Image (cartoon, rainbow, N blue to C red):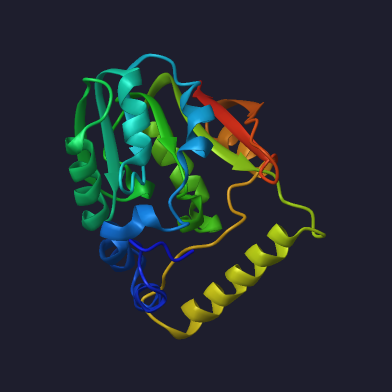
Length: 237
């Protein structure tokens, strides 16, 4: 967990005592050397389904890992939105250092629940961010992405089903979530980060309720990650 170039245990503790935004501002320079950064091999099966598009939006773009993968698929531009200035600065630096593709790169500081675009993008992606959206805010999150997409635009992401209660993954995630609930009850501002969120089939139903048609494809991940699914949700109204 503790990469030589990543944050120390105590740095993670200090960052975890901040607000979500401030915590990510602080961890940004070392974030890609933590286990919290979504690996490319998880994103790649989803981005492979994007095809060639004019404009793509990566929601909660972090340090720009998905943007680097999306850029070769875009004829016009790829835009990242995040509420952390620190993460976007790191993303801009890494993309400036070099990435495939010639599409323009842009960043917008903003809230994923209130994306400031209307019918602007052919595709939207989001990776590793669902745990920062509270269950009660998921309808706003989905509707925000819907507004940002053109009609027939697609929201492409990776998720899973609920793991069995007999699995270590289930209990580790539940234990982490319990600890975060306690932390957020006694320490303000809150740090919103939970696991086992936006899972199938509930995510599909929510998307369909908000004007999407939904296709679900096996991601083909190796064990013990074979429970992953690529979701392609197309805006139909």
